[in-house]
Structure formats: structure tokens, C-alpha cells
Amino acid sequence: MKILRWRRLLFNIKHWIALGALGFILFLSGVVTFFYGVQIPWRNDRMFSSTLIILGVFLLGVAGSGGIRALLKIIRSFNNYRVFDSNAVDEIIHREQVLSKGPKIVVLGGGTGLSVLLRGLKNYTSNITAIVTVADDGGGSGVLRDEMGMLPPGDIRNCILALADTEPTMQKLLNHRFKEGSLKGQSFGNLFIAAMNEIYGDFNKAIKEMSNVLAVKGKVLPVTLEDIELVAELQGGIKVKGESEIPIKSRETGKRIERVRIEPDHSKPLDESLFEISNADCIVLGPGSLYTSVIPNLLVEGMAKAVKESKATKVYIGNVMTQPGETDGYGIYDHVEAVLEHSYDDMIDYVISNIGVIPEETLKRYSEDGAEMVSITEEDEEKLRAKGIVLVKDKLVESDKEKIRHDSNELSQIIVKIALASRLK
Image (cartoon, rainbow, N blue to C red):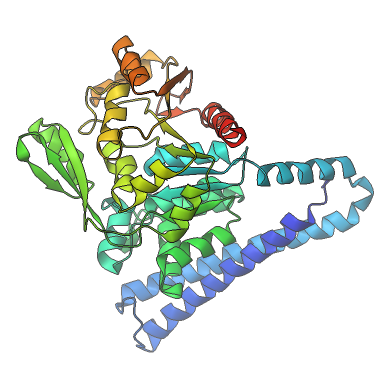
């Protein structure tokens, strides 16, 4: 190893110790419930106890293996001190200092789109705050929400991993989904957050501790700590409850979403979120599902007002594709109009939209599911100009034969330029 990165090596050892401690706690909890019948606040069935034991042993094994590797790296560093590259070390230190002085960027959203953006942004600044929706009620997150009475961890897990400085093995571990048994379909990362939530008794504290363990650059915050439910009003007065049910019902009835709201409607945001918004250089909305990931953050009491009153430049990132059952037939202005109707008419300064070409084969597969590229017409551009909104068009798509995503690096460069201009202004 040519570069002696003491700080990171020691930090990694601390992570493995923390992971090992968590594994020991889970293992011990499983043992006492399985063999001694001691009741704990989680669950008391033998299957769940067995799962805790297996999970605990697995974590101890991973932590032990990782810790040994980290120690071996330090030993090798001692042995190879003659090839110590001081210029490379200076470059690393300089880069870290640059990131710490980067623009303050707050991103509101959820889903895959948000995590894709964060992976790019962390290469330009470490002053990132991701404020994440907690209205999700489907998949593994929905199961944990129902069975353990906790907030859905899925979107938050994705954001933490996007901002984390971890080895590929840890990334694979936390993204792993069980294929059999009572945990089938559940993500290990979700269980990690659930365990942290039980240990600390506070969801926000659990997120912070997980972020510390994974060396996250920036902050990941839930938009609220209250148990909220998303409600949509479709055309014809049809009301639908539940984030996962809204697009399904919209497609079944053929009725567009007219408005969404949350229950309870007086849910409070975190003071920390409001502080970060007020001190930001740039506030970004999206990318992500318009009605179920982006807008729900603005429905929490005081959030839209805080965004509007902040001196930061406000940016909306348009999706590359429409979402069946949610934004069928929407152009870029339709997306912007929906955001403004759920907040304030003069809240957005910039809109970023893709004009990159998508392979025909990929587009065809998406169209079979009812999705199409989000269009930008001359009428859209005129309407945006009339509202004083600057439209930034660029080739921002990254696609393969399976998925279409924003190019996180290109998108991040645009946002950082806007944020730096805002800071200078």
C-alpha cells in the first residue's frame, strides 16, 4: 500500500468494532429469548429468536473478518513505510478540505432518484443534507412499519448507502435481500436500521448512529418523526390512502391525481431540517416520484414555507421518464406546476431537464409498461419563463438495457455550479 491513510484505517476499525457490538447484541438477544424464554420488547417467537442468533453470528463474522483486514493494512503500512507517497497524502488531505468547504446543498425527495443524485454530489461537497420522505408503506419497509411500529427505513437506507464511504462488501451486505423464510424479501439494511431503532429507542438517533458507522458524508434526516400516511384525490373525487396504492388505483380507474395530502396534516418537521434549509446555498427537489416522493416532503407543516423563505437557490430536477399511474402524459411544466400547486407559486428558481438520447430498445421496454420520456415543448419553456424560472437542458441520462437513470456526475456538476453562484451572490 503506497499511501498511508491512518485516519481512514483507524476509522474503519471503529466501524468494524461497532458492527461486531451490534452482532453480539443481536446474538445475545436471540439466545436469551430462545433458550431461556426471557421476553424482550421485540417479538418472542422461536423463529424470530433463531433469526436474531443467525443474524448476530453473521455480523460477528463479517466484523471479525473486516477488522482483521483493517489491522493487516496497518501492519503492511508499517512494513512499506519507505514507499510512503507524501504528495499523494497531500492530495488526499487537500481534497477532503475542499469537500468540507463545498457548498451547502439540501436535497428533498425519496426513492431511487434521490440516492442516484447523492452518489454524484458527495464527490463535490460533504455539506449535504438529504431530507427523506417517510410515507412509504410498501415492500420490506411496509412490513417493518406494520410489525414493529417504526418509520419506513427503505428510502433512508438507500440515501445512507449513497453517501457512505464503505467497502463493496459492506454495500452488498446492506443491500442484500433474504430469499427464504420469514425474512423473505426483507433487506438486511432495513433490519440494521430496525435493530438500531430498538437499541436507541429513537428513529433519528438510529439513523445518525448508522451514518457514523458507515462514514457518511453529510446528513440523512427523515422529513418527520411522525407516522404519516399519504392520501391522494383523483379526478372525479376518488380518494386513495397509502403511498403504494395511489398509482395502482390511478391506473385501474384511468383517473389522474389532482392533489395529495398527508394524515395527520399537522405533522412537524425536525428542527435540524429547518436549520439546514435556512442555511443552505442550494435546495434541490427531486429527482423522484412526483406525488409519492418529492411533494410529500413539502406537505409536512412548515417545510414548504421554510424552503420558500430560505435565501438559497431552489432547483427542481425533472424526471427522465413519466411514471405510470402517477404522471402519465406529463411534460416538464406539468411536473413543475404540480410542485407549485402543493407549495408556493414563486418557489422554484431553476428547472433541470434531460434532452439526452435514450436507446430505442430501452425506450420500447419502458413504453410497454406505459412510461415515456418527459417532454419539453416550446409552450413549456414559455410558461417557465413567464414564472421567472430558468430552464437548464442538458444530456443527463445514463441508461443500459435494463434501467434509465440520471447521470449523477453531470447532474451534480450543474447543481454545484448553481450552488456556488448562489453562495457568491
